[in-house]
Length: 345
Image (cartoon, rainbow, N blue to C red; front, side):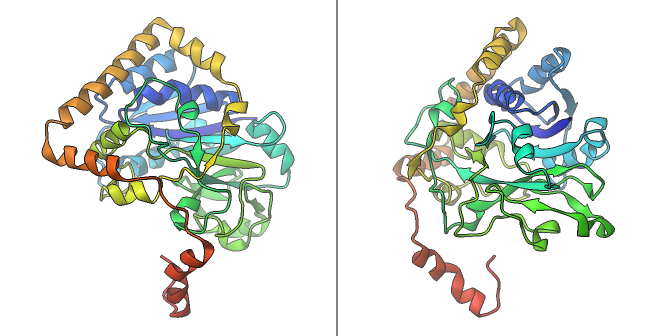
C-alpha cells in the first residue's frame, strides 16, 4: 500500500528531519515535497534527502499569485507519486499525525476503518507552553500542552486534514480536503471522523472542520503546533503564510491557538528517534541542519533591530495562555448569528 504525503516548505530546515522521521515511522511510504524561496538551506536538505531515497523534491519558485501552497498542489495533482498512490494526505510541517490504535501507524488506522474512503484528521492545537527561546529540540517533546478533547471555540481549532483514498472520486488535492468531486462517485463515499463516526454527506463536498462539541480524537488526531517558541513565531510571521494572500499571523492568531489546558504526550508513543538520529548522522544533512538552526537564531537577532518586530515580540511575551471558553460562552458568539440566518463564519 502506497501512502503519499504532500508537503510545502519555506525556511523550515530546523524542523524537517523530525517531521520526516515521524511520518515515515507512522507509515507514510512516499513524500512529495515542494520548496519555495528558501534562505536557510531547506532546499539543499531536500536535495540530499532525495539523493538518499527519502522523498521527491520539487522547487516551486515564485511569484505565486494564489500563494505557494496552491501553486504546489496544482503541480502535485499530476505527479506520479500522487497519481500512483493508494491514499493521499496533504500536510504542513507543523502537523504530526498521531494514531491511537494498533501499532500507531496509518495502516493500523485504515485497518480499524476498513470501509472508509476518507478519514478526517482533526487538529488538536498545541500551545506555546511558555517557551520563549527557540532551541534545537524535537517539537513533539517540547510542546506537550494542548487544547481539551472537546473545544467549543474557535471553530478554526477544529479544522481537519483529510486522508483520502485515491480512487478517482476527486480530481484535485486541497489544503484541507480533496477538491473537484466526481458526482457519479459521491454515493459511494464513506467518510469517518477521527473517532470512527460515520460523517454526513456534507463532508463529501466542502466541509473543512469537525463538529463542535464532540471529541474527534478516539482513533487519530492531528497534532498541530502552530506557534512554537515565541522566537519561532516571530520568524513565522516574517515568512508569511503559504495559502492566504493576507498574512494574518498577528497576536490575534496567537490568542486563538495558544491552548495549554491539558498535557498530551501520546504522540511520543510512536518512537521515531532512531530514524531521526540516522538522518542527522548523515554528514551532509547534519551540517545543513546545523546551518538551518544557526540561520533561525541569526534571523531573529536581525529582526529584533526593528521596532515593529520588537513590538510583536513584546506582545507575545505579555500574552498569557488562552482561556478555554465554556460551551455557554462559545454559543454566545455564534448562536445569535445562526438564529438570524447569517451562518457561523
